[in-house]
Length: 341
Ligand code: DAH
Image (cartoon, rainbow, N blue to C red; front, side):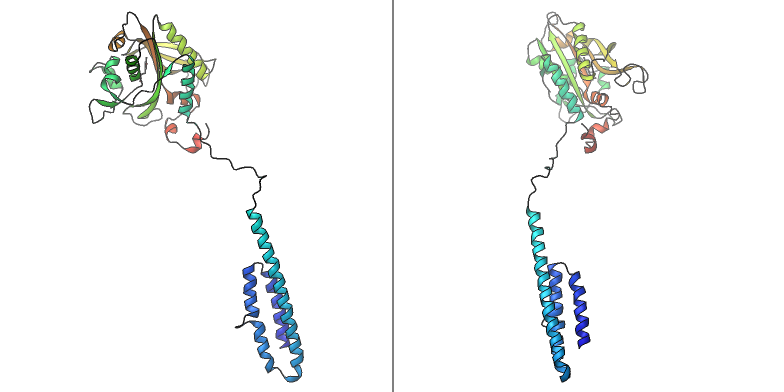
């Protein structure tokens, strides 16, 4: 009996040291003091088997054991309860000195950045902004712009036709020239930025949907010098004051004469590099003097008024400005990319 008391006493010490939660301590309590099968009550019920002359010693030892275990268990239960309460309290306290969590801020898309910069540059020159419709008729997208029904230049703009005649998805923003000139008597100055559509395969440089900007101006006495000065100002503002430009003769049905504009390569500053195929130049836009027939189509007398127009790809500008080699990068909307702008 006395041996059992000593053994249970030291086993309890180890078990108590290991129990550090209220739940573990309660388990311990049941194990030692539980009415059914608790070790201490079991020892007491064994007292009656102890021979008479040992009974007193055994009873004393057992009483001492019970008292010690009870008080130590109670003491630890109180300590653990106090610690748990303290931990809960500190979880509930708001530490106002901690830095705040930053909200997830959105970013402007690279094409939006370019569009807004262009809109600022041309607004400052007095241009109005007019995005125009993306669903268009043959008249506004082609015919009024001097693309006759069998004009070969139609083939270069592979068109998405809608089921409902005569609607199509505009292939360029030049439709806004016609719509604006119809709605406003000259002088007019308009910049139009928006989506355009062509039946192209997706490649590094092409996408069936992309973005264009179109600018045009109609007034008295406008000549190609005004066009050149306007474009030079625009290119220097968007790509840097050291940018140079040159015009090459070209052809568009709605302008005469027409030109293609190159600017000095932004990467090598004109020295020649891989990106500009060692030429030092990058093609950036198409332009020209508005064809007299286009003016006549919207009821403007070409003897009295003249104007210029230009068009460019906003995606291409974004790719040049931010050094993005693949147009797909602009449309995949990968947050890891967009967060950089
Ligand atoms: N609309 C032409 C295109 O999509 C771009 C263009 C060229 C627009 C010359 C113009 C211009 O206004 O004068 O390829």
